[in-house]
Length: 461
Ligand code: BES
Ligand code: ZN
Ligand code: ZN
Image (tube, rainbow, N blue to C red; front, side, top):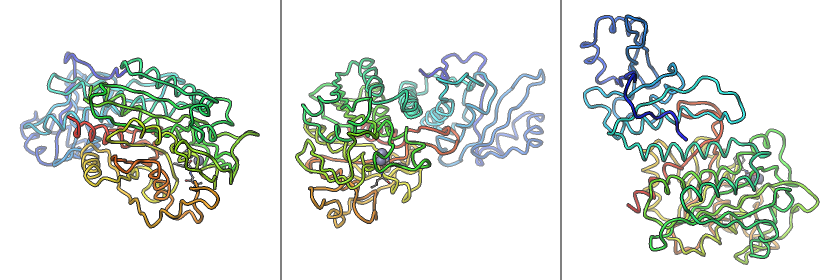
């Protein structure tokens, strides 16, 4: 629950938003003492800068905060949630700038900046609260903030607390909250119901592998399928990771956490679609029954996979989940996965790689992503590399020799399982902030979530 949004203006301190454009004019009309205070604090109307203006009785009169003049970014005042003293605040435009839609986005940035993962740690200072007048689209701000908090919480929760079973419980709670149907296929039932690839990856873990399925909305509406990689911990399997590479691997279910975030926002905003969510949830663990290098694994689609590397487990479980998602005949299918280190080498940790077989949908996602401060970068489904994922003794290999173009070959592997008559998109993301930035504390992060939600919203409303 978001407890930093308040609906009463009483005692809310104004946060006056100024930019290079309107700051000179605004200061001229401000009281002399305020002008002097801004001078002595060397205040500049730039994003990330703010100054607290005291009243004569020692209370806070107002806060002046800088934003970008032309297009304020969502993060321009996001640091204020933690930088300001505990209390209630209200954003205030100068001469109608920023406009209401920009205020909505600044408000969301502020709320996201108030996030902390403190379930297992005594609370320190509380974040500053924000008043939203009736002019704000509070329903949408709340939906996106709650979706982001859910995603971050799930990623931040370590694997001893959030294994496949707990991930399924979290998905079930979400389903119950919004009246969605759900079905979980666990352990040997995966074999009985023909999900051999999910079983092969997850069978060595004590917490049994499972496929989580959520269905929501009227079947009369167009079907949209979301698929998320749910590797609750990725040790690498027998091709074990080193300590540095393994450390953050509680976040390897970040794809599924983002998918649950998008699903939560879709259901909260009641978008007119028929939603299918598929999450293969496993732990990539080591035991006597773990899958081995060069094992040949069956898939639901009938395609066989040669295990070139047990650490390329994400694409193996996604194969079955994508096949299952396709059975519901979606118009659009999007998967989110912390799939490759190669995508991070190519684009760094903050820019998810976006693959899509439809240029119009891709353009919409990229455009909306830029506008919603949730950027993605398109990478090619480069068919000349398709032969690199051919297996020697099976149809496909999960780890092509050489390792060049690793993010592309992983995407091409997934594309094999996505039917050509639907729009399919794949997001290879970090799902983690390595350091704190305004609005984005270090730790689990939603990436591509607002962009995909808003692209679905734009396509279907
Ligand atoms: N979960 C990792 C990918 C990953 C690592 C994402 C670090 C983000 C940050 C994935 O399961 C993996 O280990 N992939 C291997 C594939 C390789 C063996 C073909 C990789 O990227 O090294
Ligand atoms: Zn791996
Ligand atoms: Zn992985």
